[in-house]
Length: 315
Image (spheres, helix red, strand yellow):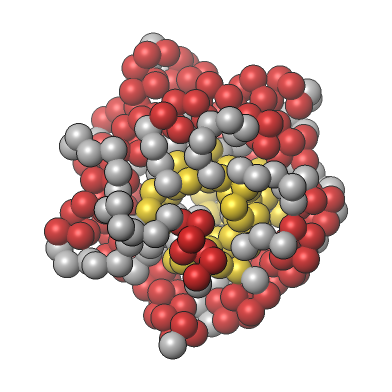
């Protein structure tokens, strides 16, 4: 695996693709790995397999590409220098693992093309929030007690490594509050890779309780940000967020909610029933969503349904 590009020079950039239509994201990495029999009950979560079973990650990406996803989000959400250090992994090796996460997604796109997929495929390097490193559910609360400058110093080294691996886009995802959003917006400056900014929300506010209008406004004038929106939230919270994001920023909107089940951080388990349906895609797209997929507990079957819906809406 040596290539540093997941698409041919004649294929459109993701930015151009968003201007032309709707792009389908993948679903949850962790549930796809879990359904394949991998134990993720670990502070590193799916990032542990970067160390132990990287082929499993490639297979998970491939399953989503074959289901109809156009974008693979890498397994680096919980991959940080600090998190790896807790496991005795050196800074240099951690950097290699971060780069590997991008390469595994590109390898999956190559395999998908070799198996007959002809559409362009893109790689989004996942950048999870500070709370993901803590592995205590605090990414769903925010307000860690750190300043914007401290959060920027946490994120920048990882962003530099991921950007150097040449993904198509950086996915600044599951952001719980405006302080961390501001830090991430500072940290991506000058990296030369576009990014999307996606909040995790509850109702019409960030998880930390800030109005979404204020939260999205932070990204309105950020040239690096090609899309704004929400992920890792209840499906019913998406409609209002799409409208607000589109109105406040004028940018394409990214949405990839959870299935509707609820995560119990203490028990490290999902409770409840899935309420996610692909039919909701029509309304999201009408409101301005151009990157549409699923997050936790949304698997290849749901992504296939979304891809079919998007295809029908594009006819």
